[in-house]
Length: 472
Image 1 (cartoon, rainbow, N blue to C red):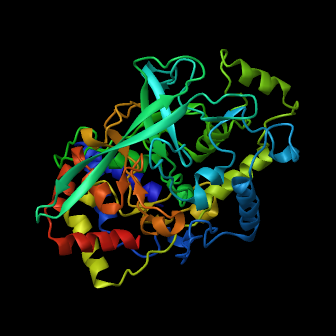
Image 2 (image 1 turned 135 degrees about the vertical axis):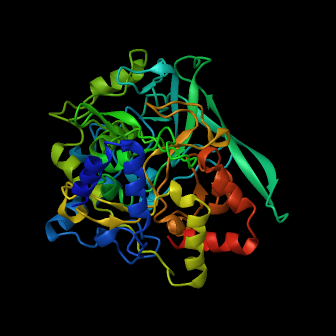
């Protein structure tokens, strides 16, 4: 139904200015819809415990609940090098970041960066590339090391390097004189195992994203993303959301990106396969290769000696269960929606311009992969588009069409449960923000006006906005 609505918008608006007319029509229609506490539509679960991000969708069928349970077992399993005690769960490495999906996405929640330069990365990683593009238009991997540093290895295989993070702070003030401090990380790649990194290497620290509701986000039509985009800011509102066009290995084609901090992955199949390989060194039918590069002799030898296996280390049946698990992780219900400060805060959210990028409402496709995900009115508070966030947040590392200052609008559902689920409140792509207020204060570029509205507001108004965001 909603896909047909979009197509009708297309038919009506192409004679004048199709991009602007369609974007304005669809954006206005979605913004006019009221936000309900059922943030994930019928998939929502009324949970607010430490396990709030681990429940199956509220409308899941019995058959899919069984597959979800199997997928959860795979997601939480600790993988071992091959040959291992359980042939169904071996094949880790030879180089890897973590030995379990769960160990990076703790309780399906948000990762955090190291506290200081002595700590290893646990729920974060470092992307690397050099100027230029790969054959598919993506980042150009760093010679020898690739596009992600594997900071661990099985016995006898050295890790590629040990990233170390140092923090620097700067002070600021709200308009009412209240002081605040913001911090920024810098990355040093120590103990490189295969020679020095090139001088032009670009690095970017990334914390793991929550995985709630990703099946719903995978079910938003590309027509919706295209309609919401306004790359040239034709309507003159200062917001120019852009679709990242990326290579999707699942379909061997170019599609609209929607996952990852720079929207550099188009769909969950590709996301799960690349995470399995890049983070754990586990092969799938989509990516049946080891990470070892020609100069990484110990890695190559360990891969050769591993027990011969028919097919991929994650079998097709396991992969389908893992895929369904990620598709049907429920979104928690909004809490305290009727409190006066939360209601006022939602209006502040709109008045300040936050909703211009953090779109409150989207509608999933009628033909989504699973019946539970079809035609759902959801409130993820994202447009899944790239926006220029200014030099303050820049990592200066392009990713397909995303520039060094552009980031995907992060979904906000589940935001207020971060500390309860993960024991911290580190936000933004590298975890630099210690809470919601600091995250807002880092906004710049297209979000500069919204940030300044927050910084110059009274303490009471700021509190209302934070109350609303904390209720999500």
